[in-house]
Image 1 (cartoon, rainbow, N blue to C red):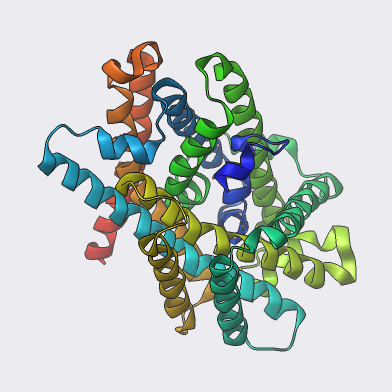
Image 2: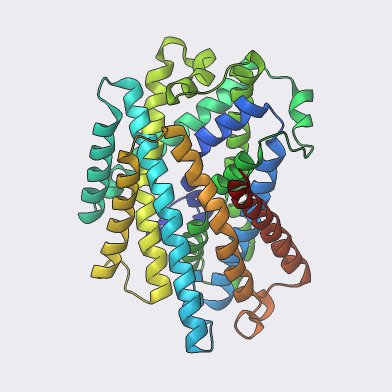
Length: 401
């Protein structure tokens, strides 16, 4: 994946955007719009800016040190004990996050196919899990990767087009830029952050930057690619909140099933809505179901020093992530709840990955002029503090019920 970036017309920033525009983003943004209208748009603005800040740090790490994030975390600690702690916490965070994400991906893909076929969801869960194992095992996933990502972005363009057709009230949308906290919205707030700022993307992006731009002189190109790509992803997410708000919130309709999500695009596609939305939702789930386990193995290989794709341990990691996602998907959980939970899990894990990144970026011996200055450290600390407080509060609420 990362190696492929070098030959692509798109930069590593595009990979990050393609990774977070999946079933989790569509579902979480749809629920945010349906339940709270435009009120949580500011959360997506924060999440988009946070993604840019953290991914910029991850990419700058590669340009400055010549090492990606995983390699840096392996080599940074001076003591053996610190190294063991760093590696253990990093692998745990990445594996747990990808496993949670994988369940949401598999269920999201199966939900899309269930919308356009008569087969039950569990059949599709089994087939998607098996297909992911086979494609990764045979290293054939790149054959369908372009087609799947094309469908995902076609669905994204559909939301932008639907936004233009429904002509929402811009005044009300602008009010969503003002921070507010509607009642019972904290869980969705964390999910919106978790679906946009994906921890494993820090590792993938860092490695992709290292392989595409091997010199500090490309810092300007790297930042331009990143900002354009992430802002595009953030805009698509805002479009989903707006279309959902018009389709559900303004009409007093609650989202109780995955099939309802498609109704946001009815003004655009009419009677073909369920079929086209289901196809796009499947593509988003399937492409991410392949990406997440591979990303977990890829990040683990950097931290543990494995040769990518050529070790038994590498294969065991991605197989374990797919298996965990499959097992969770086979239980009779509410599909929407599982997808949202995956985003919440990522939001809780995010502070761990971000803190490690911040520590490494302050190693001036290795980073030299590319190390964090006071302003960058302040931004990093603010971002980590906000997502940490939201995550802690949601955990505390579980025990207060």
